[in-house]
Image (cartoon, rainbow, N blue to C red):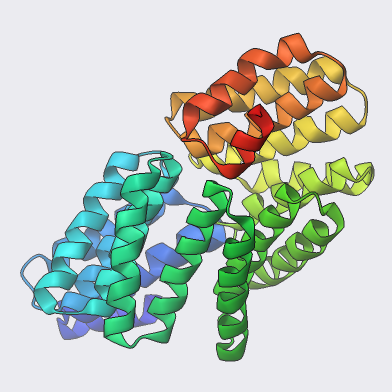
Length: 339
């Protein structure tokens, strides 16, 4: 891509150069975890495209810039650039691109645990995907809907949808979507108490993602696997993976840091290092809360509550469980627990 960029510069082809800069930025983000460097490259691409009529190149650059914003801890940037991308796709009449943008904006609402708003956007994304005829757009929108159903506590329905996405992605050989499906299924299995199935699914997602060298998402997957391994008593491997997740998660990636710290805390629980475990859980909770990442705050909260209750510290667990209930509307799972 660097050669393509240089050739485009020589030939005075701004669109081609912008496409190359966007691709370089995405590669730098995914493979090196360099969000600041990626931002510079994609911003240069957007400047080149400011007066060019190429909606796909413009959409891709805005999409990449939104992702960079999320990595740098700015949900405002993420939403702002994705809204611009949606407008570009709308003007171009590209329903496949509209699907991607609507689904991405739904993701922002899911992270904030604004489930009603997320549902409206995901429903629209599914409609657009069907109208566009794009198989990949449909897979992406359906995976988001599966994630939404998981957060609602509708695990059987979520599992059915995500398994469909996984099968389609395997048929097409789209490994990132396969890995994302595996991880979603892994979290569903954890919720249903099947830790061995969760381990198998997370392990396969780590294998696929690690083989592609994607530093961007790998730490989250490693942390998920480490947490499950710790719960299963496989402490040595869990600690190794948790440390790798912490090392691979770049400082600006708040969600990656939260998951890595939570994984290490889970390892400390398995090692009976209770004071250190609680401190780490609270660090992860505070980091997520400062960044207003309500979904990611819930993960360490739930782990901390399980730990405290396992130690017979129900009174200590109560305020953390109350915070969990504050973060999202009632689900079938929470209703059953309260009952």
